[in-house]
Length: 137
Picture (cartoon, rainbow, N blue to C red):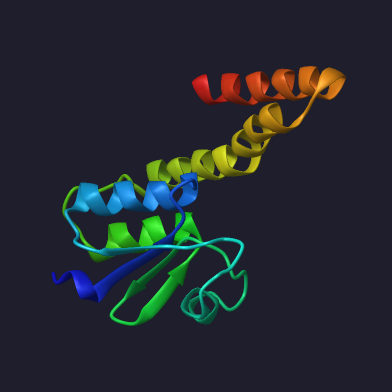
């Protein structure tokens, strides 16, 4: 597949864009990476993600797909080699559940560890540990 058929709008510091990059690399898909300035988003990014106006956005043959977990599912279903999600529907549902848990609970609580101070920091550390411990189960 030619590189110009797949574009990924992302930001190098974003774990959400990084997971899409990993998926594309696992699949062996060539793509063009477009590093966005999140304080000054490009007109193309805003055009391709009309609703949230955020990264990541995958553009395949000019058609945009937004939201990292949705992109992962699209990548897995489009390029069949080296599956990312299990084929079994129940196992796939479990993988989606834990990915969303990591996005909704773990990522924000870990970010708070870097942003808070004093008693709020102690609370953030406790919450992050509890969320990560749940992932270990």
